[in-house]
Length: 270
Image 1 (cartoon, rainbow, N blue to C red):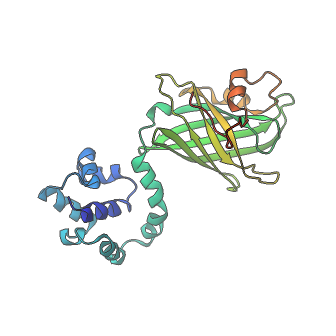
Image 2: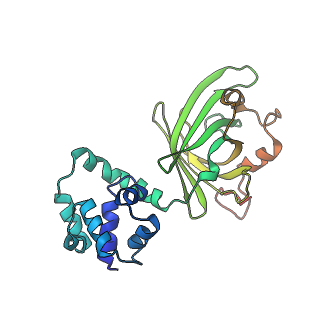
């Protein structure tokens, strides 16, 4: 299969929500279509006709040099809204195409880390991993509440996306109320049938109090897919690590220390 066809086919797919959507509408097996994208197989004449009809191009155009082909596609008429959305979404869609299945990680988690804006305090928040249209998403609620007094001095809601790339879980989230910060986390996956703790590193900064960038260790404690959300939220808040409310094994896993000869904050695989 020619490199031109492989590159041009990938470009056409980038204008759609996902490779899975293209395969469904083409009625071509996903595994077979992936071979076309990888350049390891050439479409039959029947499939080539279906591909050209679906994307609105001719076979001769599909075999053009990629730079010429991109110019051809740019000149073809597309709805203004699709044109506006396709380019910025192309990068996310590329990550989705390479992401592995995350079905086993669906459900609720307690998220633990040392607060960026409340020195010495540990945040326990409630997070959810869910799926829509074969993509995986993330929600996280932080209630900055003192568990002793019950008083809250802040609420943060985060939404984002989840990828599984090269045997690592990646979460990219933004603060959804004021839209003023982005956090990125990379975690080790679980190789057990039952998920326990997921460990990793996150980068970001406080939503208030100086907005100083930082990095911290983070732990996700799996709760299940069917929980009492109201009761779980009551257990969230800001905690003193010495008051016994957070398990000692979790505290040891999220302690932010850099031991010589290391010069960067990292976390060992569990």
